[in-house]
Image 1: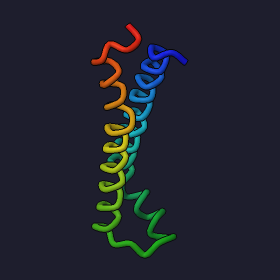
Image 2: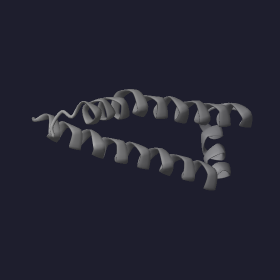
Image 3: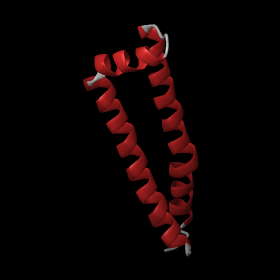
Image 4: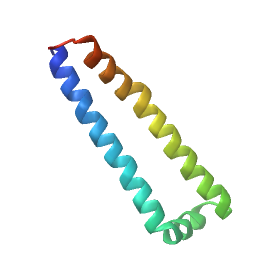
Length: 83
């Protein structure tokens, strides 16, 4: 795999990962109460804990995208590797 192909793959990874993050957020906001009822059947979670867990998980996911996909893509792009 060439550097240019790797940049292309990382670019698509960024798009797909952010699409997953946005979809997660939209589903969480639009179906908050049904999601909470579903999860509260399985786990004894207060509403604040449920919200905090989702917020924290989204934050960790976003940081993972930044560190493991966006930064390498940006480094390859700025270094001119592949062009």
